[in-house]
Amino acid sequence: MKRVITYGTFDLFHKGHYNLLKRAKALGDYLIVGVTTEQYDEYRGKVNVIDSLMERIEHVRHTGFADEIIVEDHIGQKIEDIQKYGIDIFTVGSDWQGAFDYLKGLCDVVYLKRTRDISSTMLRARNQKIIRIGIIGSGRIANRFVPEAKRVSSVNIEAVYNPNIESARTFGETYELDTYTDDWNVFLDKIDAVYIASPHGTHYGYIKSSLDAGKHVLCEKPMVLQKVQAQELFSLAKQKELVLMEAIKTAYSPGFIKLLSIAKIGSIGQIYDVEACFTKLAPENTRELKDVKYGGSFTELASYPLLAVVKILGSDYEEVKFESFNNKKDLDIYAKAYIKYKNCLATVKVGLGVKSEGQLIISGSKGYIIADAPWWKTQSFETRYEDTAQNEKYFFKFQGEGLRYEVNEFATMINSSEKKGFKLTAGESTAIAEIMEKFLENRKL
Ligand code: C2G
Image (cartoon, rainbow, N blue to C red; front, top):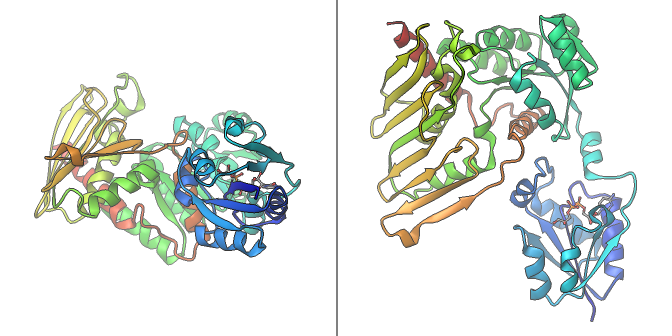
């Protein structure tokens, strides 16, 4: 009996998949089909699979070609399976030509011609209304945003707005955008949603105007620097059934989400302390160290550490105290926040003018979690215990600049009936804004 194996995501099942499975079955007598899990797809860079694993398995089963269905959930599994199941032939579509030649020592490798003019990506685009995104601002983060957004099939960057038309033109031509403009109404006409990548002080105005115009909003951190503004904007978004999301990329990245789960299921016991640090040396003459109203280390960098604190300990802290060292413009080059909760503590350390170890350490009654710099990408973390034999290390891919995760979440929220997600809630963003506001009040003293 000739045993054949093939693998795939089989998302939005279509005739290309059907043809592949039919021909795979015809190669032998027994066909095993490996269907990828969401986590494994996320690991290998597929961030927008629509159908659940069970739906995708059901679609494969329904063809009647598979004699056995397994899941593929980790890298290297193909080699293990070929030996475990005594496979004679591995097959996959010709879009993978050569990619699995390393299996030739174990079995025959057959690349079957890919069915033309159909793909899950195309169906996703057809099935789902493409969300037309307009970018406000054309600075550093906006330049990183465009290539990342291209990795998310359900969105398209249509336009860029900048009051400085020359900046808008340069950016628009660089990325071949259909529209670049300094005319707000022209900009709004072309889009369904905005990504705000302008300086902190302009965020509130752009969010308000965009929501008033019925546009969904993804706004760079810090979204706003006053609690009351955050409350007002989130309730406006809710009232108009629009999405308002703060773009703190860590909140949407797979590794950080897993870290939160590990912390919250009690792996390290009761949590008593969270210490988070993020420093990034900046030259004296940059915006962050010149803008006397909104500049400084805390407004620039504290969104990440505060995200960790608020996600792990919640928003109901009792008091917060600050210490900082300031430059000649009275902007903090190094700042520390000490946040006291009823039964736990948190320390946030940030610095544009002072370098320190960018760690996240969560201390608990049974052990602790440590994520080394850059913990805000959460490519790895470790749980550590008194009995070091119990220590566990976790590793994650952080694809590219990691902005694709927030773009994917933004698109998912827009396409879902619930216009809010769990990864970073309105309450959590509001708590972060409140602590930012308290820091700025404290700095004026
Ligand atoms: N396929 C095809 N024709 C298409 C689309 C897909 O023949 N028009 C084939 C692919 O080449 C693959 C199978 O159908 O062999 C499943 O395709 P996907 O669901 O896109 O899975 P993929 O990401 O290609 O995963 O470890 C995963 C596998 O290596 C392949």
